[in-house]
Length: 225
Image 1 (cartoon, rainbow, N blue to C red):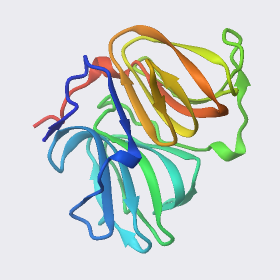
Image 2 (cartoon, helix red, strand yellow; image 1 turned 90 degrees about the vertical axis):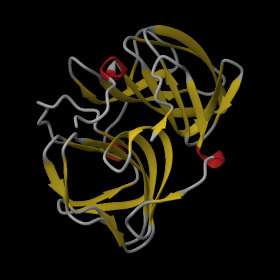
Image 3 (cartoon, rainbow, N blue to C red; image 1 turned 120 degrees about the vertical axis):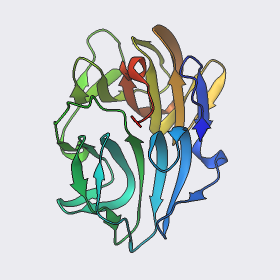
Image 4 (cartoon, one colour; image 1 turned 180 degrees about the vertical axis):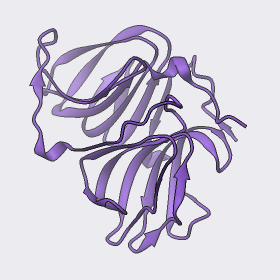
């Protein structure tokens, strides 16, 4: 399957307009954002676990990155409530599920194959620092290396904010909303921007909390084999 597989194109999607598709695991469904491949795929998805659902134990050959949007995600290492950010590097293994149910934003097969950094951050327990170059913006850093920069940005209400990036960008709205290129983005909207660039967004009256990832689209490729 190829879905939004041309990474040179801007893509904007809104979760409440995308149908849930069942996965091979009972009780687990997906809203697909982009995808190259079938069940083993380079993929960005919103995944919903019904209460009591669980995947079989498996290895992430290309790595897995996710942030918990609601509920509690669980695996062999523990419980991850809404707001937790996790990176399971290539060749890591776990048995994911959720007794109470949860929803996550997850990215698969998008790591450097040599990356072995395991990251767990509960963003509810750490603060944000003001961005010295952009008024009205504060940042919670999540991960940064030579390939990518992942962070949460908080934008104050009724502000015009600039966003610059190198190597592509993804923005996912965790809360609040904004307008970009005359399109309104709301909770769980997703925006992918190609190449190097800059844009401005008009933040709504409730402000916006946005998961931002930049740099990584330079390395977009399907799983090997």
